[in-house]
Each structure stands twice: as C-alpha cells, then as structure tokens.
Picture 1 (cartoon, rainbow, N blue to C red):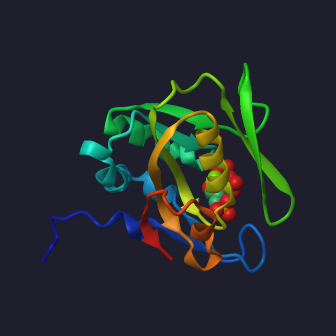
Picture 2: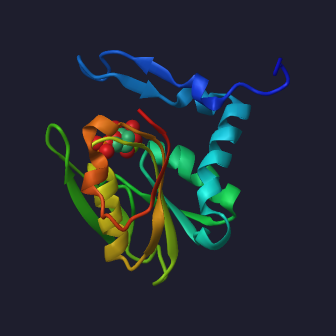
Length: 178
Ligand code: PRP
Ligand code: MG
C-alpha cells in the first residue's frame, strides 16, 4: 500500500462539459492550485526541465491564468517575473500583438523596457489550445529582444493543433496532453 504518498496533482483537474459554450469540454485547474500539496507538485514538475543550463533569467506569464502559475514558478526557479497583459492595463510605452480567437480578436501587451536585451525568458501559460495566445506571446517577446529558452504549460489540447502554430525551434514542455 502506498498510503504515505500524496495523491497526484492530476487527480484534482476537473472537467466541465459545455463550458464556456455548448460542445466545449473545459478542464479546470483551479482545484489543483487550491490544494497546497498539489500546487507544490505542479510547480516542481513545471520547473524540472528549466533547471541547470536551461535556467531562464525571467519567467513571462500570460494574463490571466498564466499569472497564477508563472509568478510562483519564477520564484521556484529563483528568477524574476514579467506580465504579458490584455490591452490597456500596462503604463508607459507598450508593444502589442493581436491574435485571432474563435470569435473575434484579442491582444497582448508588454512594457517596452521590461526586458534588458538578451535576457533568457521562459514563457508560461496554463493551456495550449489553438496556439494563438502562445504564438502572439512568442512574437512579442522576440520583438522585444528576448532570448526565449522555451515555453512551459500544464495542458496541451492536442486535437486543436496549437503546436503547429508555434515556431518549430521553440522548446515546448507540457505536463499533460489530452
Ligand atoms: C485561455 C488559456 C490560454 C489560452 C489558450 O485563456 O488560459 O491562455 O486560452 O488558448 P489558445 O491556445 O487557443 O490561444 P483565456 O484567453 O480564456 O483567458 P484567461 O487566461 O484570462 O482565463
Ligand atoms: Mg489564458
């Protein structure tokens, strides 16, 4: 009996049918974060590929669920954090990238002076679905002179084919493919 070992964080992912729209199956990661032990396991698993020679200088997280994972991951790795935000939230000079959604458009912004040139950046978000969000974030980081070491995500929704929208030389580490 393995009664002393903690249950795996994956067991706390909850699936909701027909959210946010009919026909869509939504995977809710919030119960993973709500439990201290599971949240710790998740962060350790996310950090693992980016230790040693792969260690970034900063983690860039995508608003909003990417903040919940990216900021604590930055501290687990011992680095800083910068936000890629929805439009109109960041002061000063910002760079913007628009991307298309299933219905309409959205955009991400980053402060022009957030990164010193050549900083090694790990991009973090919760889910890779169609890849639009991550592709826009990677383009923005490239435009601002980042050296992107890769992208770290919790889930990849494989049938949506998002990986094909990402540059083939970008290392993408996901914990769970569904
Ligand atoms: C969700 C999710 C990813 C993105 C993935 O964010 O958190 O960021 O969609 O989808 P894609 O690969 O098709 O672009 P959402 O924009 O719903 O907002 P939130 O993070 O603020 O909840
Ligand atoms: Mg998001």
